[in-house]
Image 1 (cartoon, rainbow, N blue to C red):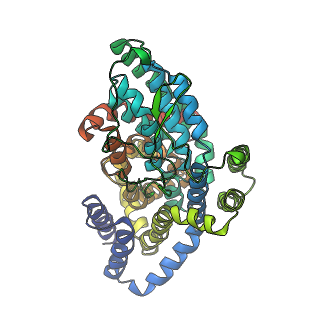
Image 2: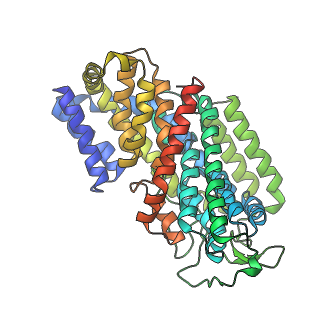
Length: 475
């Protein structure tokens, strides 16, 4: 009976999420609470929830302060020179432009927010693609796949979800996976090179002066970026991460490069810029990421300290600090709320014994020859499952069952968690990811065209990550 109720609870959760009948937070709370009553353990619901909240508090703290930290870094202009350098590198060579797209998307993805990544990338690169008559599905495909690889950062969502669902440390998942993810990122760069050469062959190597098309920036074509969504072109939500963050005080006006060509990009006049503090912010970010990798302090503590220091130094005025925190509050609330709501789901699933019952059933269904390969099985399943269901559904509904099945064959939960993030390059083009609609909308690409072009390359990248993890002995 527990097995049937467990699968019924997961199925109900997935169906309501995929049909958008309930928000993830509401579904994570109400559905398990209802099934806890069905199981006959409603009186213990409070204990299950409090135990879950206690376990998940460090993960929630990490996500909250990581969002604030990287949001502030975008506000103050840390990434602006990188964007402009990439534009200078690209010139009018289609191959360079596609490679530059991958590099820019990967760098900006450090903030862990898909909507922000796509807004900045499209704002910077769209005028070049448009003016040179390049394929815009190349822009969306490369940006989404690069962001998918980087989406595995501990503060990006999937890794935190895996850590939350299996109650393991996010650092223990992410740091060992760095070599495999690096290979995956190199695969994205190689893909962008191949696609860029294809575009170069189709269009030729032109100079901007030879291109006769003028990109007219009308009201509906204007791309807005900077610290936020701005006025007009908006994008709500990401894969469990919330919408793009920021004040949206300025649109992204055109600016000239060294050759006098005009491009749209990051607003060089937004009020939150702190050019005199650029090197301080860059050094702070490098030290923070180094400390995270070297495990000098727990990740939540590092981002708590980093966010507090970044706010204090860049915005010493209390009013400005409140404004920056308020600008990123929606992201923080969405993500932290999701984590604490997950305490109900995972608490009921485990406290009632549903996970154990379902795991026993799954173990009995897996051939003995495959039991020792549960890492590989999990990695392969992560491709279709994270594409056809939300990250919430996979990591909170399916992964705990796979981990229990793996544990029965002597495989540590942390290895299952590492394998589970392999499918993220494909996930970021899923129709269940709101951020992808920000991407295709700003790039003026039909979602169907994006899907047909991107899925095969994104799936290949996911397989490269998984194969590398197995080859390096990480999974």
